[in-house]
Amino acid sequence: MNRLIKNYWIKNIKRIRNARITKKENLRLDMAEKLDNFPNFFFKNFLKKINQEDFITYPSYSEYEGLIKALAKYNRCKSTNIYLDTGSDACIRTLLQLACKRGTNIVGSSPSFPMYSVYAQGFGASSIKVKYNLDRSLPVSKILKNINRKTRLVILANPNSPYGDYKKKNEISKLASALRKKNILLLIDEAYVEFSPGSIQKLIKTYKNLLVSRTFSKAWGAAGCRIGYIIGNKEIIHSLQNIQLTFPLTCVSVKFVMYLLNNKNFVKSHIEKVKKDRNKLCDLLQKNGFDVLRSHTNSIHFHEKKGNNSKVFKILSKYGVAFKKGTNIGTPIKVVGDNRNTWIRISVGPNIHNLSYIKEIIKSGKKIN
Image (cartoon, rainbow, N blue to C red; front, side):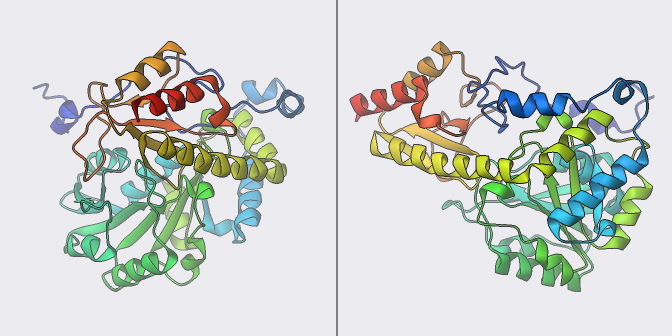
């Protein structure tokens, strides 16, 4: 053991960083990004806004403040309720830094975003992972049973990834209320909220211990910009700002996200298409020989009813599609309550059911069925 490394546990962390097969349009089905490209006219109009100074100089805090104001307006809150950082995962990491210390713990669902526990360990906290029931339910009561006197933060993704399940406002309210009595923070990670029945953000006015994190990486199609934010009460937001990086966002990233916000109706129209065609794809798969795990995110799981998904693997591989598959070492694709470990998870987008490889998969399902 290298004695220079004080946090010895870091050596044993297993991080999965598989090289991507492709980043091409309609083939990038592995990371819940925007599946299709923006129209040429839309992207070219943005490029006109970029200049040399965006690369030569540090970002201006006035640019950050402008984006924060735009986000506050979009979310119908005050600027003092917005914390801005390098992706929602950086926001969450900073919150963990604020909330945790050695000997404390965080509580969250399992499976979920794996970095919650990694970040917590970095600040000396342990992670209590609450497993789903066999019917893929996770009642608030079960989460509360895992809280103890050392708990400082509960994190729930809503909708959750990978399963895409969604908790209603009354469930979150019950959890926030119980945690408030114990002086415990509750973070609701809404990375996929645009694909769901809706946000629970309004509850922040009722519960000062409640925070909501958001990202531009999923529905907004700006994963490469690395911009996320937290909405919460101004005291917590101010504390987060005190410990964040000096210049967390690039000039170009800020400009692109501002451009998206100024064209939010264009983005919202795209999101509605994704939701509509996600459901259409699920219907097609179910009618043609596949088990489907429906989702409130922009990803779904599916599996051959009679088979081990080998035919689907071959079809997707033939077309050069990047996707999550159960045969990947280190990334088994399983579904709670199901013994098969060869499930496939794909991102979805507009018109996905008309893509050649999806049509071929549907056809193969008919033959099996």
